[in-house]
Length: 74
Image (cartoon, rainbow, N blue to C red):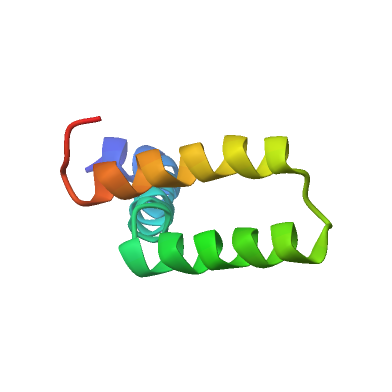
């Protein structure tokens, strides 16, 4: 019982950190969010605020995340 009193603050922080990580992972691998980011990337390329090279690099990262979100092999 006394041990719980001493570890309670740490347990609370660990619990909160796990919840934050779960939410971050959910958003990071959300296919709709990835599609939104791909569309924004295309818009930046079209507007000239992003070079073709930067576009290609960022697109590949997003497409890899999309494949992972969909459970596909890369």
